Image (cartoon, rainbow over all chains, first blue to last red; front, side, top):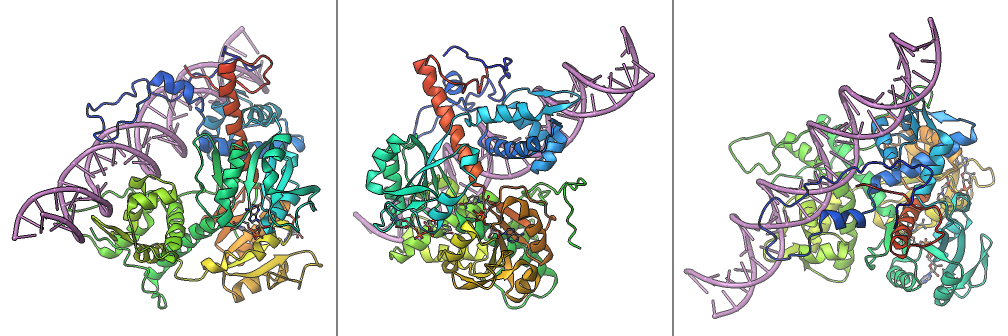
Length: 275
Length: 275
DNA sequence: GCAACTTTGTGCCTGCGTTCACAAGCGGCT
DNA sequence: AGCCGCTTGTGAACGCAGGCACAAAGTTGC
Ligand SMILES: NC(=O)c1ccc[n+]([C@@H]2O[C@H](COP(=O)([O-])OP(=O)(O)OC[C@H]3O[C@@H](n4cnc5c(N)ncnc54)[C@H](O)[C@@H]3O)[C@@H](O)[C@H]2O)c1
Ligand SMILES: NC(=O)c1ccc[n+]([C@@H]2O[C@H](COP(=O)([O-])OP(=O)(O)OC[C@H]3O[C@@H](n4cnc5c(N)ncnc54)[C@H](O)[C@@H]3O)[C@@H](O)[C@H]2O)c1
């Protein structure tokens, strides 16, 4: 594991991890003892010193930066970039500091350098082959979408169970039967699986993907998938998004109601306070 | 009057989340009866005190509970429900406690009651009319999707600029021209707008939605939208999701490398350091 | 070469969200 | 009726993320 270091040499001095993260109290859990990890082990295991929230933002910065690069912009300050990305500039600088120090004080960041570094951290220097399972409404849209290949995520395999779809090319790629998933996934070195099947089939499809060796899954079906620890799942749940928006609508209506007598809805209050 | 300005000046557009989070609600439980406070104020405050993360989970619980209700399940414990929803049971109980105390100690929660209460909090007792702008690949999928109406989010309007699409029904609804957006949105009382146009058109479409009175937006285009404070935006960014997965792939490969000590290994590395 | 200015990188504080652990409450069993 | 075991609801601790503010570090101008 020798410390391999890239061109960027310097290495950020660790960040978080307070040394004295020991448990203060003396009373360990009564029931489940579990295992407590200790700093050293934890340190290595958690090579992910980068908070996931920061990773998500890095992806956004990357997009903004790519756009700037195309426009011929060479350097940009944290203030400007933060503005374009819709975040606080201090947060942006902190996010960037997780990946190293690539800025020049008094000047800003070199767009190209930042693009390169973020891509490196996000693992975009490799291509990540993607497969889509369930070529219905959504699956078709995904297969036809041109935005993925351009960003290093070529869709290389499509699966379904519908006999009418098997063999038919969608977005240039012929649909394979789900039963061939293991073989095809191995052949095309698929590393990310996208689930766009009806909810009922999602868990089974997920299991098959995992069995085929896929360790990263993006799930569009509105179900909670059960997977082994080593598999990473992200979900896109439109119904949940809608409901969150609905919650805000309700909140807003609630506040408005307060001043003006609302129509009939009376149930809004009563949220209550019981204790 | 839209009050929407673009990048030109620094609008700042406050942080995306938590608009006026200055509240330092002090007494959550308030079991001390002595300090009497006005129910109204507290009610409202209480309501808005639900963390957004909890709202998102409530939506998930709701789905699980709805499924259980259909299966004829009457009661369920926090442990079971937490399991089904993929969260920690303590967290689940705390989430539920935000909306009131509807459980029975020693027994659990009555499914129907919980469903009703969560729906109330999420504002699902009203229908929220949805419009989709940009009827391309994704827009078609969304328009054809049957899952929204069933959950209280009927899609009632579709917009595009492509003359070939105008008037053509998709999923039973004829596509209107974007220029008619204000009128149509008002007529059909649209409260949620979905943006599925190419990135370049997204900000403009967003501005039009806002001008038309839509205060909740779900954005699929990979751009950071600028909106007035009172508008709630949620985004679904597939590229970002992919990149987060990619990050995990890279990290994993990194860890593997560590033990194996691969010779050539590519560039992925040096992600972190810490000491 | 020095001073004034700009912008980064980060220590520190604050606040939120998560998790633990347990008293309180409820039903059932004896 | 009273006890026992189960499950809720929540106070409290903890850890992480966000944001401020400033020293460090670099640039530009004189
Ligand atoms: N269409 C949307 O806009 C939309 C929006 C939000 C969520 N979703 C979710 O995405 C998923 C797909 O939606 P859709 O509208 O494309 O559905 P769809 O019914 O149009 O397509 C589903 C496809 O999956 C295939 N399929 C079924 N079982 C399968 C299996 N075991 N293995 C492989 N393929 C299988 C079907 O043959 C079909 O082609 C659903 O879970 C839906 O809830 C869709
Ligand atoms: N298709 C996917 O699976 C997918 C996946 C991720 C993200 N996205 C994003 O979703 C958006 C839509 O993707 P798509 O594949 O459906 O694109 P698309 O090109 O198929 O469709 C875009 C539609 O928007 C319409 N349009 C263009 N300008 C408009 C305007 N000013 N007002 C109204 N309508 C306008 C076009 O006429 C077209 O019908 C894009 O931003 C894309 O990046 C799509």
